[in-house]
Length: 289
Image (cartoon, rainbow, N blue to C red; front, side):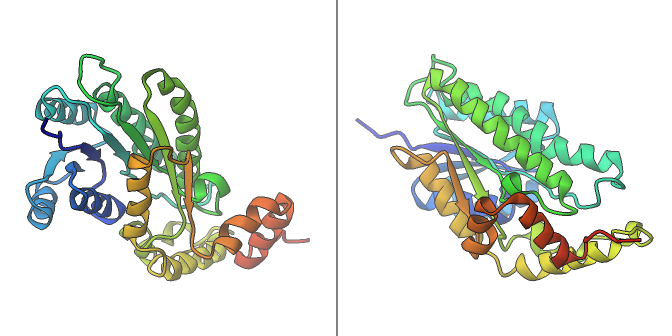
């Protein structure tokens, strides 16, 4: 009996973690439907990774685009289940919560939260909810962040979106037990990808008269230094592959550089102490009058 090539959809596959996930899966013999917004990005990926890389246009903020991609993938699967959905597409919006334009916050949530729901609803039937398909149930991998657990000054919109992804994942995981579909969360810390390595390009000038401006610049400097020095995207892709293939995957993988300082200690120390340490480091201590 001929073994069916496993297939996965990876959103936000043009660069960074998404591109690394696509490469790892193709290298492991999978067919990857790589979600990109620009046709030229898809052609570049296909040129790099070969025939097992199938570009599909997916704008996670556009229901028509997402549903059309799901239809394309359904046709290509020829009655088989989709083995993996990697919800990776995302953006990071920065700014102080009290002063952030609401439209910027809404954009953050539309991409990172509503976009995840939009994609999951469109591709969920292909993972085994549609019981007319042949094959074992697939799995969903959700790309969260250390910010999804910790939060961070001036990354409130991003942290909010990743907190939401964590909650959605926990709820969805229990709902999809009905179909045997696993939901795995990946929570990276700093990763050397364009979303963080270009931190110095973030325009802070709209906040130049804000009392938060100096602290924002300190955070921006930290991001610019630590983004390029973070884990390579391939390390995150390794965990994504494990999430898709381990017999009993963890529910959540925390992949955090300098783990003790950036993950373990903040999880066990009193939260007030952690808040005070962060405030002192970036210059957010209360001003006494």
